[in-house]
Length: 362
Ligand SMILES: Cc1ncc(COP(=O)(O)O)c(C=O)c1O
Image (tube, rainbow, N blue to C red; front, top):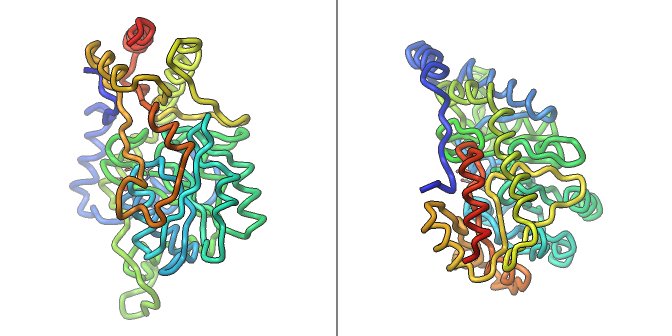
C-alpha cells in the first residue's frame, strides 16, 4: 500500500556517525547542536528569529502566550486543521471562534475572519493546511487594521512561499513542527519564528521554566510561568543532518503536487483546489474534492493506494466547539475532501499509477 504519510530518515551513512558522536559526547541536553540547528534553520527560512522547541504544540503555546492570549480571550481560528492548532488555544484558557473557509482553497476566509472579530478577540490563528499557503496579503491587512497578532501554523508548509518569500516571514509568529511525518523531522520537535527580538528573548525564558540560561541559578529570579519545552542536542543533531537535504526533499513534494495539478484536470466528479495568486504550496498532502468520497477511497485502496481525510474537522470535537457555529462552506468542502500521497516516497511510477487509477473512475 502506498502510504499517505511516511517518515523520512537520512541514510545510516549520513546520519549515524554524527548522531553517535553527539550521543556519546557527554552533552546531550540543550547545547551547541541546538544553537547550530537554530542558526541553520534561520538561514533556510531567511529572516526573523528562530526558537527551537520540543514540539510544534509547544511553539503554538508560546506564540499564544506572547500574543497576550489568556483566560477569557477569544482566538479566531479554522476547524480544518489537525487538533493541536486548536487544543493549544484551550491550553491558555481561551475560547475558539471559527471563521469559515474559502470554498475553492480550503483556507481560512479573510472576510469571515473580519465578521468574527469582537471585543474579546486577542489573536488570529491561520493554518497552511496540507501545505497550501493562506491568503497572506489579506490576512496581513486585517491584522494591521484591527491590531491583532497572527499566529501562522505552518506545520504542513515548510518550504512554501508567498510572493517569493518563504513561509516563516509573513506574520509575528510562525509555527513549524518536526514531528515524525513532516517534511523535516527531528523525531519530535518544533520551531517558532518570531518577528520581535524582545519577544524572542522572552520566549527563550518561557521555554525553560522562566530561567535565564545565561545566568547562574543563584543569579536567576523567575518572574513568570515557564515550561520545559526546549529541544535537546540529540534531536537537533538529527535536524542538522535533515536540513542538508531539505531543499531536495521538498522539491519532490512540489514536483509531485504540480504533476497532479496538471494531470488531474477535467475529470468528472473531481475538482482541484485553487491557490492564491503569488502563493507556492509545498504540498505536504495533495488535496482533492471528489464526489462519492467513500467510493473514491475504496477504489484507490483496491489499487494499493491510501487516500483519506486524515484529519477530523475540529469543530466536531465537543471540547473544541465553544460556540457551536455554522460553517456552511466547510460543510460542503469537507464532504468531498480527500488527500492522496504526494511526498518524497512517491516516485514517477507511483504517481502515474495514482493518476491512472483515478482516471478509470470510481
Ligand atoms: C497543523 C498542525 N499544527 C500543529 C501540529 C503540532 O505539531 P507537533 O506534533 O510537533 O506538536 C501538527 C502536527 O502534529 C499539525 O498537523
